Picture 1 (tube, rainbow, N blue to C red):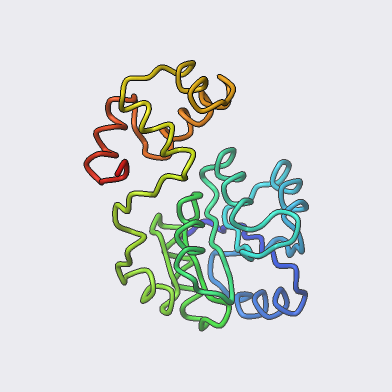
Picture 2: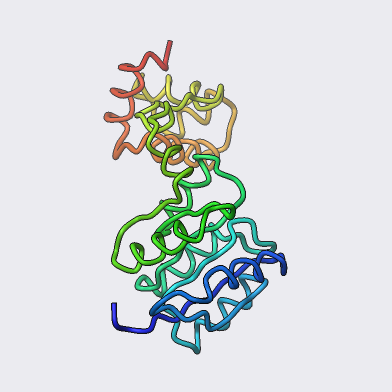
Length: 211
């Protein structure tokens, strides 16, 4: 790791910025080039300046670290982005990673954890501080293929779809507009990740969702 990597630290609490940058000031091959308090400032900065690593607070005001990560990765996929937080809820961690994040570190992590995570993320790994690693390694029900339920209106429409009714027929029977039924139909297909009505009805029947 001979290259000098440019890192930006983003947190809306000055005391956290000070503590984190002080902790990481002696990292080999990693230089903290900017300390910022908002995601908006960061977005402006990376448009005109080379950045290799971003250490970002998950709960920034205006635009959260989670949304910020997604936005940056769409335009600069090569930038390593590691989330920081004092909260270790599994859902937050997984959402950040799904948005392209390269890792998630708790703010109370040790210097060694920060250092190892940053270096491993630069090398291409998805990284977590020790406590987060324990949490994400435990399989929970939300990680399984849980089939979402239908709302009452969605169920009414799905039942009529299963009977071969077309959109206008369903609209007439339920006293809804054509557009409303069309929107519900599209949303139900997306909700269950199905390509067509036949596939949707098969899935709903299999999971007893039309009873």
